[in-house]
Length: 310
Image (tube, rainbow, N blue to C red; front, side, top):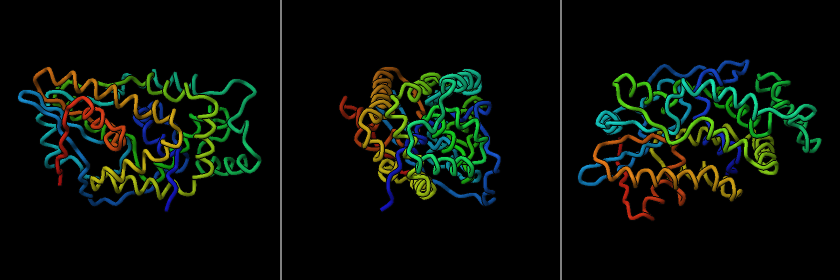
């Protein structure tokens, strides 16, 4: 059985940040060309409703390959019926300069430090090989905090598989909403999301970097499995792939997953008191497992119902 890699799981939860074009660090190697034919996808979606309020919960993938047709049928109808779109981060274009500035400051090591500090000789050699294969400038990666370096290397891997931040489901929905003059709201800001990682302890950052090194060869298979699970609406499988490795680090699980899901469930609960229809679109890993948004809603006595989207 394939090991559930910590760094891939963490990167999946963070890439809402990387949908702003000005903050992307592009690798030298172009992403692989994708087939032109459209592939139908049926991602998971839930609904929470009462007599005058409907809130859809749609699991997204922050980066996506061109040609994946997910906006059809009940997903399309639910989105079009909504008065408001709510994403993890709203107005990404306006957030881009702030995110870029924070990455340039909080994501960099102090002078005299490198990303290799604290690693074994074998780990240093392996990391050097990964960086060389990535296409990113080695000097730039060397000066990054371990959390930042891990995410940038993971981003490069996603892009080599043909996954594109500009094709991300969240970004696509944002564009559709704005074209229809539909209000777009956010649960968090880019600064808050960067803070989740920048405030990791040295031990947590090292665990993330070591996972990047040790699990690199398995990452492509895991990413492909995640994408397949998302496209086919297998929420439990996707949740297992994304969340199982996080649970080896309880503090990370609380920070990156549980605390955020609980806050979002609290917002849904409060929003039910106001009439209208909201389409909530957040990373699919937030909508699966014992710490999911739906699980926290259930604790509040609020039922969520799965909608078959095929």
